[in-house]
Length: 159
Image (cartoon, rainbow, N blue to C red; front, side, top):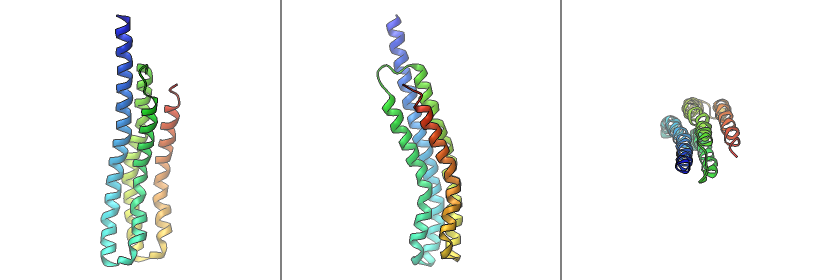
């Protein structure tokens, strides 16, 4: 009976870790999709009026995509921790380790998309101000980086 409970514990730990890996990526990627979409809508309007502004608009539009990359990194790190003997406790830790990048990545990507869209509108009127638009959008990125670091620290607690 003890063997069955221990085996069930390991399977549940692995399931929780896989669930965390999925949450970490899917939430961050959904936020990135929304943020890139918001900025893309603004970029399409600007580029339709002035095709020469494509590159600055594309740079600003791409900025919210980094949260999906962060979620992907966390997913790979979590999957690397899964083994046949993963305890229930470690499974929970890995599940919770994915939540910072999942939730913060989701929200920060959307807000970064909004700021990037505003930067794109700024580029429409004053193309020389593109760097200011990038700096403003980068301020939102800082919170995604903090969430990435917290997720990494939590994952590293699993031996």
